[in-house]
Length: 251
Ligand code: UGY
Ligand code: MN
Image (cartoon, rainbow, N blue to C red; front, side, top):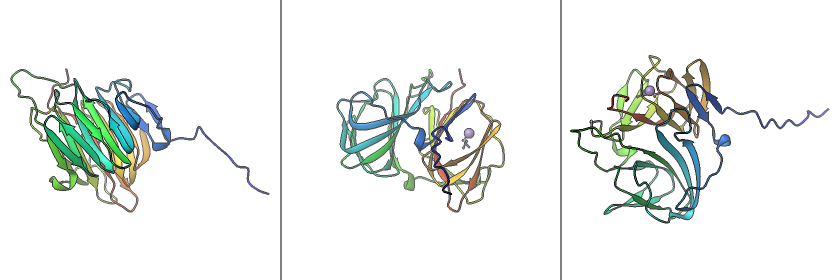
């Protein structure tokens, strides 16, 4: 006898819990954003998700997709190319970003973007947390292969800050890569929040009371104080891109 075909549309790894969300590729809904044409936007985190104070979006450009006027006014903005090519203009600069290429623009520097081929970009934006006596941050352009990857035994791999870690910057974007079979040596609980985009491989994320299987393409929002720890599974080295608010007192 043939087995019945089961279509369990409600079977999904996506979760909303008190201190985190997990969104998987099959959960993501197509949106349009103003002043972007030929671009599907998939919001991953916004101030509508738990207490998030930042926005993170997966932008899927068709060939020729582009902005129709400058974007990012009133925010600091970070772009990271997952695949394809993004031609970005900002202030007096022009940047051709390849996969792994990124650009940070401080508040006050708007940008235009165009993709000559099918391209996927992560866009992070937040309001700059200005502090009296602290100079504003500078633009930063780079590539993940050209920054220093620091070994870190507490996470079982390497972390690479893509932005300078000094008090002008109120956000970090860290590229983290894990050894096969490694795990965090502690469960972190901290006052900062995270936006985590899995770039490669797979693992198990411990979040609060849950252990969740995660893999490339998944996104996790972690609220402040969410207990967190990662175990690398699978046969390749997992990596993720991690947003974190830094260098501020939390008020
Ligand atoms: O920097 C961090 O907070 C980082 N170790 N957290 C994480 O990967 N969940
Ligand atoms: Mn953390």
